[in-house]
Structure formats: structure tokens, C-alpha cells
Length: 351
Image 1 (spheres, rainbow, N blue to C red):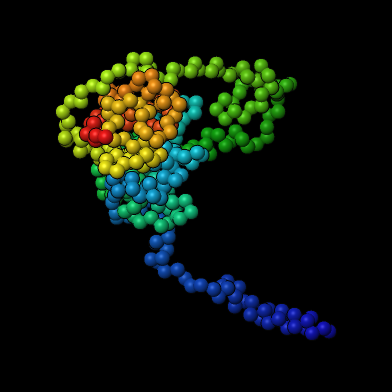
Image 2: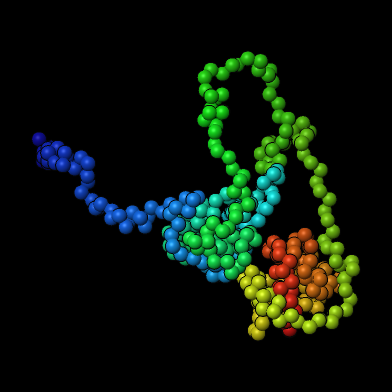
């Protein structure tokens, strides 16, 4: 018998003797302490059970979001590339291609808190404090126009927030209403002789193009809208700026936090992702030196578009609707008071 075989038999015999002692345990680690389990086993229920004590508002949440979330979800929760959009989509659930976000689709705010706390930031999950989580969730709500920026979200005010789609879900009763139809023997009677493609999956575009028959449901492409209606009636002279409303200026400075990720303003302001905005009110569109504008914006400026308060208000309401192919990624201000405040603030900053 070789020495290797002999050694193997001895080891096997030893393991057979000790195996029962390690049948249930491997002698590694220790029993987790209750406080360790509690720290790991987070679960926030729709009724608020499991919510930790803490608080945060959208003002602080914006800064945290910019540092920990914006690289995937965008500075305004609008999503980047294929990463999820967290804001927008209001009244789209009955559309052919609905946008499902926290503001349009999610029925429980507890789901948002639980998911952010448990799974975010991507690649660094579990590092957010309770206060940071409350602040981030508050910023997401603010981005969906569901709260004011100074609303303090906490375990005590959590259910002061009304989720738009809270009543949009029903109890899953498929086990009793549908499952029985899928079980048992199939009838296999009155089947069609031939199967044909009669509709086209337009949203996902997954049906192969097989000629006219396969594209019977294809809609006519929408007519392209003019680049902008404002260029034809552009103001030729800079209007006289009325006296400033100082209270509105203060509010506008606060609202400008939504813009500062791309635009700089004030002393020493320089171009960034967007042009610096000193003296923008009353100036020609696309005229900030050193910034590379979109072709649409450059052409609008060359045609005489002046950024009057009225034109700025129209643009900031829905930039991409106002001017097709603009590089502006911001979806626009939805509240009239925010629009009025931001324009008043921009009026206050001279070149």
C-alpha cells in the first residue's frame, strides 16, 4: 500500500469519527446578535411599520442626490441613458408607453424609502444614514411636484404625503379567477388552421418587418413642428426692465438650486455644462461668449430672439417644446410661482 493511499485512509477515518460533531455546524463564525440582525433586516411596510426615526428636506436632499444618485438618475431625477427616471410621467398610465415613476406609478411611499435605504447608491448599498434617506426621498418627491422644497419628511410626517396612484392597484386574485383556466386538459378544439401576424408591437418594435401586412397598425409619422415660433416675432430691442421684487428675487435664488448643476451665475461665473447666465435677461439668445450652443439656439439668436422675461418664461416652462433640438436637458418648471421667481432672480443678476 502506498504511503499516499495509507494517509488518505487515515484522514477518511478521522473525518468519519468527527463528522457527527460537525453535521449541523462547521465551526465558523458565531450567532448574530439581535442588534446586528436589526441593523441588517430593514423592512418598511405601507402602514409605516419599520420606519426609522429621522428627517430630511429636499434642499439637503438635492445636494446628497447630486453626489450619490445623479450620475445614474440625472440631476433632476430625469434619468440618464437607460437608468430609471424617478420623476415625471403624470397622467401617462393610460398611454401606449406610460412613464412609471415615483410620482406617477408607485402607490406607497414606504416602497421608495425601503428601496433607497436597502439598495442605493448602486455599488455602495447600505451606506446611507436614515436622515440622508429621508432627504433623498424628499428630493424625489419635490422633483415630482408632490411637496414643497422646505417640507421636512420624517417618520412623523411620512403619511402627510399623498401618492397620486395610491388607489390604482387592486388585490391580486388571479389564483381564484385565472389559474383554474390554465390548469387541466387543454380543449384543443376549434383551433385556427393558420396563424398570422395581424398587429405590430409598436412600442417595443419587436415584430419583424414582413412587408405591408405586418405593418398594418403603423401610424403615420407626426409632422415636425417648427423649430420655434418665437423667432418669427422676435423682439428687436431690449425692453426696459421693471423694478425688481426683492422678495421674489430671494425665492428665485432658492429655486435656482435646480439649475446650478449646469449653469453658473454671479461673480466669477463661467460656462459649464450650460452657459453662464449673468445678464441673460434682455440679451440675445445664444450669445454667451465661449459656449457652444445647439444649432437651433444659435439660429434663433441669429434670427433676433431676445430673452425677455416673457420669452424666458415660455422657454423654461417646457424647453424642448419651445425649441426643438435644444441641448437643454431640463424638463421645465411646472409651478408658475417657481417660474416667476426664477425669472425675477435672473433679472437681478447683471453682466
